[in-house]
Image (cartoon, rainbow over all chains, first blue to last red):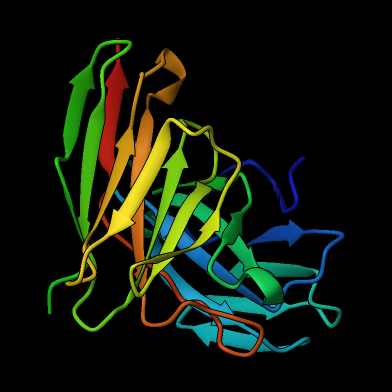
Length: 112
Length: 117
């Protein structure tokens, strides 16, 4: 059972385009983290959101946590080839704070 | 400051063998978690250790075991290896154990690529 569903699974776009990745669940999470992973490497933490409705910005990346803390989105403005990678969302539940539940990832390819 | 380090980076074993993977957390971090990432999927939680005690266990068989040492480094052991154990094994460190109030921000190492033939 996949508790966190990410969509789309694959995305291939041209440099300069905008995109949104979605992370959805029927479960409530106490916090949600977004990671970016390159081939053969470990995931790199981008952001943590903890409050329902919270919006965080990291340069051209905008992260939002749903009001009910069941879903999240990542929006990239004017994508660049350096944004290429696997984007993973991961949620933590209050009573299992040490265990991150990951989505299956979104493979993004940005072509020059 | 050094990030999370893992050794070895790559490992090739045959079915039935045993393997030990090692992890050193970020200095000052007391929690280490282990994840298995099969190609094309997100990481799956195996264990969490905090202050040398097991704090959580994922849905993995008893062939998987781990421990944490007084210096907070950790080992993951897998016995009787199966072909399906081939994966990237990731170690993540965090300052605290994580709970309802304190978000558990985890920082990952580069992983150990295990191939079972």
